[in-house]
Image 1 (tube, rainbow, N blue to C red):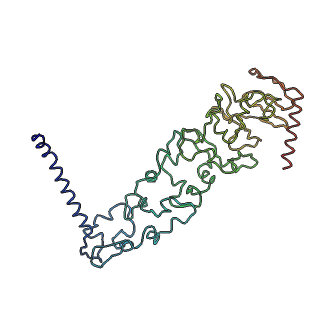
Image 2: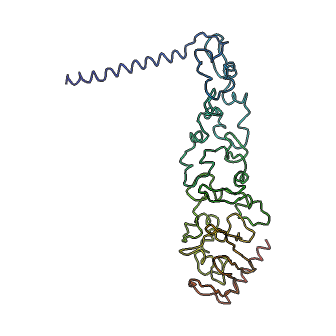
Image 3: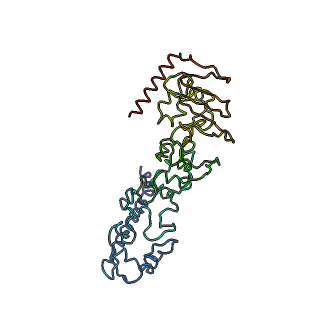
Length: 393
């Protein structure tokens, strides 16, 4: 037991003594910092032995540049003695030279709380604007969780750390500290044809938005781009906020069209029933043509016929549609109770809700049974009455 204590003594006593010495030096340093000593308070702080290393970085706050401006922010407590304090608290001190950065409706949280030094060094920095981080992206991620800005589909300004392309760092008149209202902000970039990160050309949404004689998709017409698209990276193509098939063809499932169903829940039923007299106007008699186009192993996606932003045709029916590397015409014509189209997919096909056309195309077997003439007549009467009620509102 004696030998064991002998070994422990030589192991722990030096550690104890080292701790005592560290504590002693710490106490002396604290005392030195608080001790009042004589200095020439008329001399430059930078030229002195205390702050001679200051003013050497790439970007220097103007009052610090030659040391003569120190008393613009700090005041001497007693002439000839080392003792200083700020003339007033931040941010009031900053605003004595800089314009008020929190004067707009929507304020960045640190600006609202007057935490200027959360982002800026007060004296000097190797970063522009005296920032505490070398880039805007790195600075933003000191508070914002970088994981929330990750996704397989990047938005170029975000992926390049250009946060200030869209957001004001201090305060703005628009929600989320946006520098412009949506959609004007989006149209700064999307006012011409550009290519996505994979090199796929994207037409100008602004041309559609400002186009004459176009029927616009309602959220797009209201400038609500963010109803469908995320401004930050997500895992859906085209920065979409929900699932939507990327290609021209897709095997049908409700999950695949989750984005559309957020606003068009009734479309679920229109795409599930092979026969209907009410759920869709795109029918030949009671044959549901939406179902026949979409609900199949190799179904056509919505964008095969409808434009997501706007079109010259009712129901956002396209004039043309992309198919591989080609642009093909739809050749759609609307009638009062139906219509016709003659795209490259098939010969001209006609449909009518109450006087159905016989199809001459080779098609898959038609599920269900045709509506009787009496059923078609009643559905027409019901639709006419509904239209009259809408017109009287």
